[in-house]
Image (tube, rainbow, N blue to C red; front, side, top):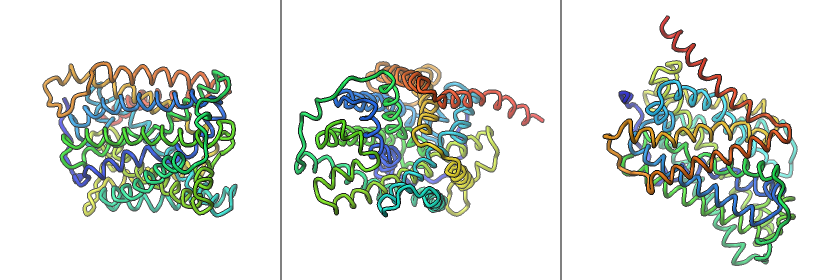
Length: 445
């Protein structure tokens, strides 16, 4: 077992702040943007609901395993820490390498661009690419600075934005079934499903569930993590899955799957306009923008803790491990991740291709992270575990099998349409091993 790093980050995040963070990071643009895409790929309501339910359960199983690891090893860096303890420096370096170069900047870029798109849509100026880039960059800069000022500031932003997005989704669900003029028959209707479309739909569903793992990265700043981390993760995941399944049922109740496929960027607005008129549609668009803004904030709060932890362990440039003397934040790591996110905004081309570029890579890393439960049960058998994964080993096995099947389907589906982005992402991941070897040799010089 490695020696824990010197703790300089303050434990200032409580139960509500942590729960808001996991919900806020996970629920971003996906639930408001991907359902029409999925409906176009899978024109069958029952299959759509099966996908949302199945990967919701898979995500819960993975989160339960990470709850055990988070309470056992409550340090900044989360998954990075688990991989290092289970498999050694090389595996941890590759995960950090991916987070710095692929997953964090692309997530930040995608969320900021979607925020800009929704704002311009609301203002009646869709398609203004230059203005969208400017708005996206301003959003990244403001939230980067907020998270330099302290984890408490970032968590407070997450609490407010999460409250708005949960309220918005609850309004859609309750409004649709209590006030909407929909039909239950829509939920059972649909046509034939093609294998290629199904595989691409899996990518969109997994992207929408992506993000829950980031809460483990702020374990070093949670008050009494051995007690609160399990409550934060379990409460957060149950909230997320309930809202996702409920929102999709509401969308399908209000419109047939064929109509749903045509609501590209405004399905929630269409539903709320039908329920509460144009004013309701505008309010839900404002709530969606708040949701995306909150998810962007959560990513800028949690994910820079990975390069911070790597620097503290000597696996990356030491300046990334600096904490601010006044605000006790990994300010250099936060600023650099924000800057790389801005570069990605300027290079961003296609949103849907982008998500497959890193979803496969990030969830492939999660396979090893959840499998660390098995490794550390043997390797660190005597270390106290305030929370133990229920129904072990079946719960982590469900996550591993479900994720392998899902990722295999995504890769196959993307290759069928000539998109090799997942392969490129995996190649970049593999390149991390020789880079780690080179880093070790340079450090010896």
